[in-house]
Length: 96
Length: 321
Image 1 (cartoon, rainbow over the protein chains, first blue to last red):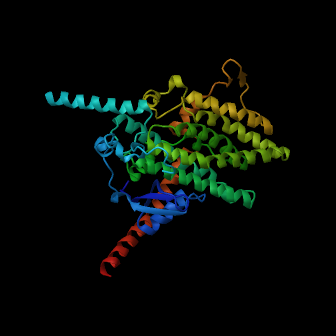
Image 2 (image 1 turned 90 degrees about the vertical axis):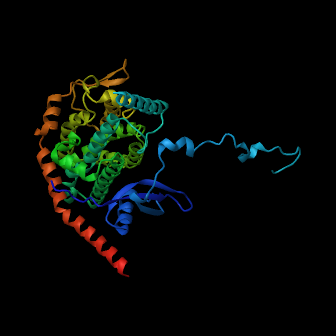
Image 3 (image 1 turned 30 degrees about the vertical axis):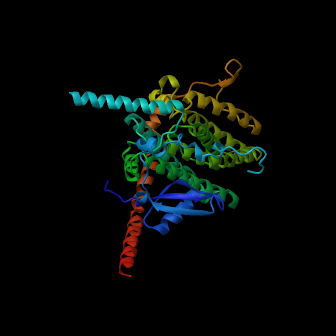
């Protein structure tokens, strides 16, 4: 079989309702942005799951390496002063 | 030699890290290191799953123009569109493992990748559309509900999405069967005939008995598979028998009997010779299904070429503007 173009890959992000975060839904194949948007709509929102869609060429995404997780996502246990509970409030103070 | 030993050590360390993650119940994501066997198993299973969704559109597509009412036609169209969508979710999830869409389609066409055996049977009457939705999708749901907790993140997320949509498929099928069973004698006969033809192939969808299943070991260890073939088959039988009774259909198995001790139905022997005969290419529709897919894929090549040409033209115009 000859090599057949399956068109470029695009990542699809959807917002489920106004104000919500955009969440990755999956990917689609398309030759350009217009088709990517149309295919994303046909594939991922057949039941009104979304109010807005983003499509991004897959190759434009840079992902972190899981090997770097310790370095990137250090829980910062030594920086407890970032937590509100670190602070001592004067007795009797209200609504703080 | 020293280098080899070192390499081996690294590999063992990686495997231990991976298995710890699985043990903890963490999901595995595309960029995580994973053993070759895990990746291969998933590619095989997920591409087969995707191909099944897409090939499964054919027996139902056969009835779009002959649906008995506009309502039935709209429903069938929506269901078939869903199946296409499910195929796309799964291809997209499988691509995260490093296999291209083109390669998956090639493997389907060369016969290296399989699709669910059930779609090698023909949809002969309208009652078959009912039986496919109720029994075939019903069996698929049992399997897919279990796979929602599979260890590979993209596969699991695709399953959650699919399960949400799949229950409409089963209900529309059961509705068709119920309607026919409340109709004329000829309609009842047609429904029972569809039941008789689809029951056993539906049970075969869960694959060989646990004692005979060649892929189960690693798949269970790596939590790709969360329940065994026989467990899932029992779950399907248990819930389907009651549904058949309600509408007056007879399960075509004279050995089917409730077993108080196991809490499940006992069923008669499955004809595995037929299963292996069909899977190896001698089913009633194997040839037709594959020829159709190849032909439509080839006939669509110009659309993909035209789309690429359009993109190239747009980019050129953008450059000169």
